[in-house]
Every structure is written in C-alpha cells, then in structure tokens.
Amino acid sequence: MERNVGRIDALVRVVAGVAVAVLAVAVAVGAVSVPVFSAVGLGVIGVVLIVEGATRRCLLYRALGIDRCPVD
Image (cartoon, rainbow, N blue to C red):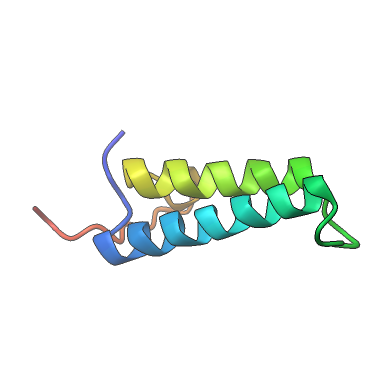
C-alpha cells in the first residue's frame, strides 16, 4: 500500500495520538473522568493515530480515494 498521508498530517497524527494515549492512561488511573469514552477506547484511538502517522498510511483515506502525500 502506498503512502497517502503527507508529512505535516503525519506529524499531527502522531502528536494527537500521544496526547490521546496520555489521556487514556490518566483515565485508567482515575486522575481524569471522561463520561463517554473508556480508557481502552481512548488507548485504541491513540495507537491507531500513532501507527497511521508513523507509517504515513490511512485506510480511510485509501477507501475515499484521498491522497495527501506529495510526489517524492
């Protein structure tokens, strides 16, 4: 599968993924209460964002035919 996520988009995904993962840990230890999401759900979202940013591949972009990666 070809890359379809640009550098800036990938960086934003990694930073957001780390932030969500930290929030998941905070929810898991009881430091923060989030009414809708569980710690596991937040953790999964965080990991998905980090993996998409690190690999610069997004399955949703692929399904929708979006390519945000400039020609290298």
